[in-house]
Amino acid sequence: MTLDSYRTLGRSGLRVSPFALGAMNFGVKGSWGCDAAEAGKILDGYAERGGNFIDTANFYANGHSEEIVGDYFAARPGRRDRVVLATKFFGNLHPGDPNGGGAGRKAIIDQLEQSLRRMRTDYLDLYWLHNWDAHTPVDETMRTLDDLVRSGKIRYLGFSNTPAWYTAQAHTTALLRGWPPVIALQVEYSLLARTVEGELAPLALDAGMGLTPWSPLAGGFLSGKYQRGTAGGDTGRGLITGGPSEDQYQVIDVLTAVAGEIGVSPAAVALAWLRGRPAVTAPILGPRRLDHLTANLAALDVTLTPEQVTALDEVSRPRLNYPHDLNEQTGAMLQFAGTTVDGVTSTVYPPLLSDPVR
Image (tube, rainbow, N blue to C red; front, top):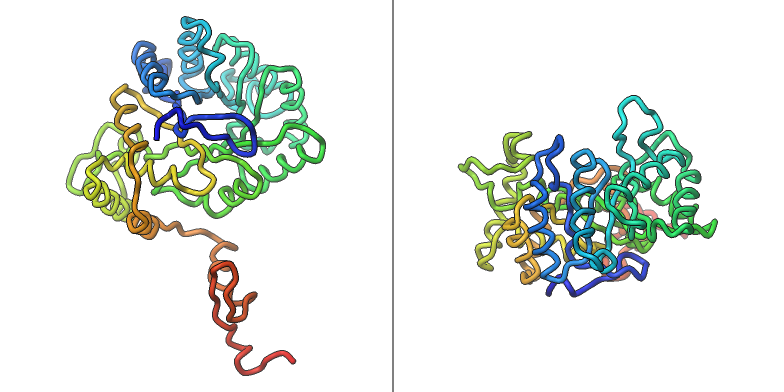
């Protein structure tokens, strides 16, 4: 597979590469990211492989990430319209201004204008709500986004880091009122972060939303830098937490073993596993150096066997909370009464064995 083996994003006609290029690590204004020169090399490398999906946010590096992306395309006339350019709103860049961030009408419109200015473009292909705004009615947010789609300033809508109930409410409200629907969800998802499978991934499958996972290498823990008895590397999560926990190392052990069987890096295996998950359209790579991008794109050539997928699935199986745990334990037994439905075979609920209903 290559980056120009495009996929439609959710239930839409928007075609994107199987890996998105995340620009969170672009920018040095109050950030740990790379400078504009290195970011340009990364953007060049992604484009040369056929990549067309670039993701950033107004909050990344205090707006510097958007500026870098904007300057890059402004210096290359004609290239901007050939890519899917996405950014996010919610983050407040104006201390002391309660309307500087969030998902209210004033905030959304102002944030969009600022992002368009920094990115030196007159429209965005995909505009993400970055977090849930508990202080704004959902219909205000969705109506404002509808106005912006109708104006031509944005083309498609996505949600990031929002609760499943709120996402479903927003999506249903939009459908009922003839407003643009939510076509994609940006969520934390990796071998070390699978709780999305409890609510958000099923919602995405049911509603036709494409998943674009962020932190697909768990902040570097799945990159191959972390092995038992080693010091790890310069990853952000490692510097904050001091390294993986014992439970995380159990996943890393199996990941490393699978990588050894194939002869590729653990990062390539982790990304290949994620790319094959239901509803996942385009995991977001967040390189800080060109060699990071090159190493991660090796995942395009990795094909896991069913046995390898099962091994990774089992060791990383998430602990999901109520009601998922209850439904998984008793659902088939209570409803199928010893029959097989859709490939699921159940046992008979014990009381039925001695006291059947007549």
